[in-house]
Image 1 (cartoon, rainbow, N blue to C red):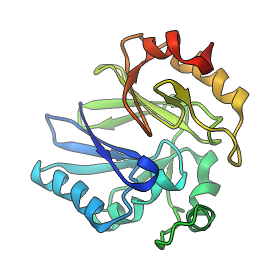
Image 2: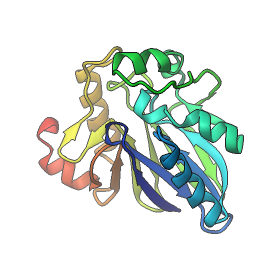
Image 3: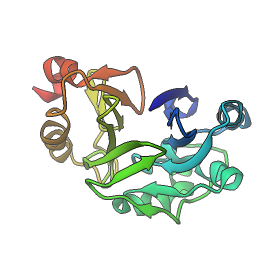
Length: 213
């Protein structure tokens, strides 16, 4: 599958579009669009490349990863997938906006298809495996494409860092334990696409990430 990165303004969120080059089916992962221009950039890419949006997937439901869900649902009618342990976060998108001083009116996320650890999401002929790694949020997941050798890690793992654990439902011990037991055993050349910042690899983080020593 092909992965396209949109770097957006809300907390520097990376929104990913994963597409099957054979069928044209695609998924938007962590839609963080908060301005009309950002919404249009996603739509223009989908329509210019004649893609069919079949999935909206969230690695977790913090506001920066979920701000653009309502727009995509209205425009394309695609279902939203997330881990049920983050349902309370989705129900409080408006409260999250107030907490972070975000003036835009954003819609809560209440109707999601639940994902659990080990689920396989089919996007055209490609697949993403769900890996549940709580700690940043209770329902944080990573999405692993074994065939193409990449991992969309949300806010679990970053280049040289890990997700913050001081927000409600966070646990540093749970996060570090989950990264070490669930992510680091992946092939060392697996490319890690995080929710913020540049891409890295599993091998690089296993060797150099100071939080994982």
